[in-house]
Amino acid sequence: MAIVKTIGLTKKYGQNVAVDHLDLEVREGEILGILGPNGAGKSSTLLMLSTITKPTEGTAEVGGYDIRKNPYQVRELVGMAFQEPKLFWVNTPWEILNWHAKVCGVKNPKQSAEKMLKELNLWDARKKRANELSGGMKKRVEVAKVMIQRPKVAIVDEPTAQIDVTGKFQIWDMIGSLRDEGSTILLATNELNEADRLSDRVAIMYRGKLRVLDTPRNLKDSIPGGDVIDLRAEFPISQKTAEEVKAISGVVDLAIMNPTHLRIYLNRAERMLPKIMNRLNELHVGILSINMKEPLLDDVFLHYTGTVLEEESVVAGGGTS
Amino acid sequence: MTKIQFVIERDLRLLMHQYSILIMRWFYVIVQIGIFGLAISRIVIAMQNYYYYYAMGVIVMTMYSVAIFTGYEIYDEADDGFTEYLLALPLSRRELVLGRSLAGGLRSFIFMAPVIAGFMILIGIVDPLRVAAALAALYGFAFGVSGLSITLAVGLRSGDSFDIIMGALDAFIVRLSSALYPLAFMPGPIATLAEFNPLTYASDLFRWSLNFNAKFLTDPLTAVIVLVIFLCTFNFAGVAIYERSLEGGAWR
Image (cartoon, rainbow over all chains, first blue to last red; front, side, top):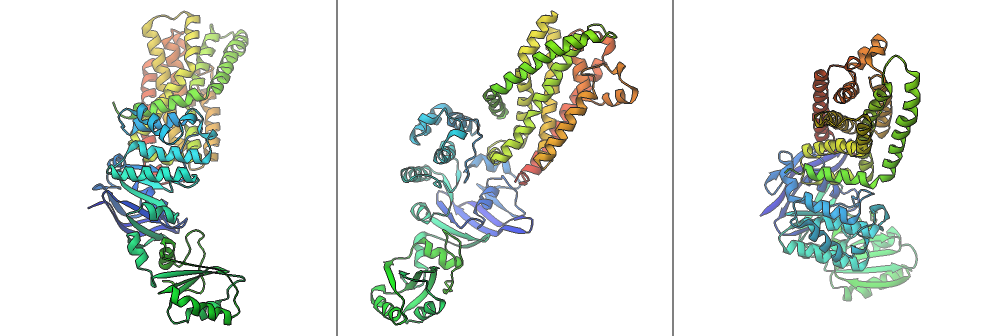
């Protein structure tokens, strides 16, 4: 059953179309990872779902309430942790969480705030002003707001950006436990590992449109060729060399990730590798390293958008989609 | 209880964080009343007890300048991206605007409480009815000014425009009012303009409540009506503009 449903949801800022007729259904109790580079329309979608901005066209329903007609009821169901922490500079973590808990109707707000601050290792910093906190601390306070609220639909926008490795695992566990307690979670991220690890399903957005939506397993299986070979060359790889490699029988697709990094999609990599190496030898291309792997979500992203997520650059030499 | 109480609580706590500004403003008010007020009242001979008239005007003027602070905070919050957070909370826009307006009025009140209390003791006003009427006049005015500042902060889309308009308003609203001199002593056209100024009615109602000579003041009933219209207009306008403008994403 869909707890969130967008119907032709569109947001324009002047001539710029941030979200373009998005149709998306989020099932109750799932973690839906929304993947996309900056400017893909993730944050604009989430801002509309939390009724902060109004759609230009289309609408969405959250828990059966229309975001245009019943924004207050929608806000009662939704909790949001923003990409950039929203902390007013004079407030302390203690004040922020205690007040947030009260406004959101949390029982025993003081005890809940204390528990959350301790869980996120913020107890010692509870009396510091927000402008005295480190970037990671601010981010943890932001995430703590949603955790303390325990909303029906939790929207978390890049929850582990600026957070150290230990903190990431802690926040991932907390997001998992939030889902286990019955919340539906919309997780916007451009960290592939995070989306892969946490999401029940992943939606890939690119330039305001939904490109694909499925489970991480199904998405990886949808890549043509079951294996991936990453080759790193001594010198930049020319377009001609890439085309020569693509012409080798058994190579399904390829992409130039950066001037010296070639990614090849193929079946039975162990058998194909000698053929590829021979051809590269003939073309006098020196290889520094070879890495064979199964497709990851970044390959899925590359396949459906033609770009690399970490640094949105157009991939030459490979018509990957 | 609605969630307005939490909005008020937050804004009051913010005031407590700004104690250095509070102390500076108190110092300003004390100097203004204690030095300038005493000196100027010796020069003014056309009116008996001008010192008290002046001191009461300064109190109302200061209430105005503290209440207007809410608008500046809204701009600060928009700069910090904090507005998005407030809009995402399970609060209606009405609760948010009214809560902030009520808090703006209360903050002016808390800020001026020591000065008001000191002044009342100085002039020997102990009648609880008179004290209550004086405080109600001050609070109603400050509540309306907060609503005005919210309406302007949200309605004007640039911080620069807000600064310019608030600066201009501050200059005109004080000078074109009976805060520092009675309507009877103003040139005709200026007195007419001052009759449309809520600061005139707030100052005069405050003075009337504290038993100041009524012949220099506007009619108290008219003053009450004007202040009620003033606070209702700008608070409703604030709610309407907040819903249309901010929810549409204009703060971005």
